[in-house]
Length: 267
Image (cartoon, rainbow, N blue to C red):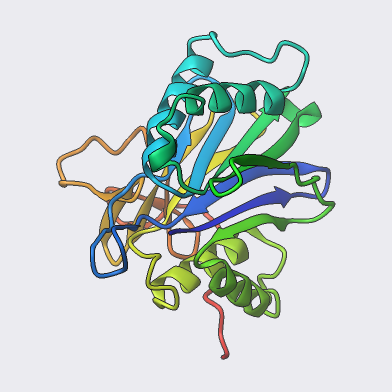
């Protein structure tokens, strides 16, 4: 399965950013047959949209690049019915002739921004498919007034929620570093054997398109859950470490002027 979390960061004025994080483990029949470099978070290159999936791998992993490509090309647009409606319609049409024998439960998380700058608004739409009943369910969490987790899903959801409760008791509560710290803690401890690998994170700011963050863990670089070979040009990627600090991916240390974050202490 998967561990997945979506959260919104709120500053003194309004929601300022939206994030989705996932683990990178894909399993076949159980945790022993696994691959820890599977991509689960996607971002549009020119538009403010993020996607992630939970549950079945094959259909979402094939469908979501199609959806992001259509959005970037201007083929899939908001025609006034709302992005939630248009994206769900596109997903269901892709799924309509998917072989019934291979249909499995899955969920798709869609984060997007309408507008730009201080007047912008962030949105999260969750679409879930149940194979047994061949039915769809939509959940659209509302935006809170303080930094909060919006959605947790997957086989590791309990571990993520438990870790989030502990981080909420720390001085970092109600911050993005607490949300990501809880997620990283839940996945790295191995509480859920179906979740693992490096965290992968996508984000939206008040301006610009969706972005995928590079993650620096134990001196190693990962992008979309996959290890880098070491010869890449790192300049075009924003990097974060396990404390969600802004770091220099090449020098492997916190950027000058970046805020220092502290690990959670206690049990």
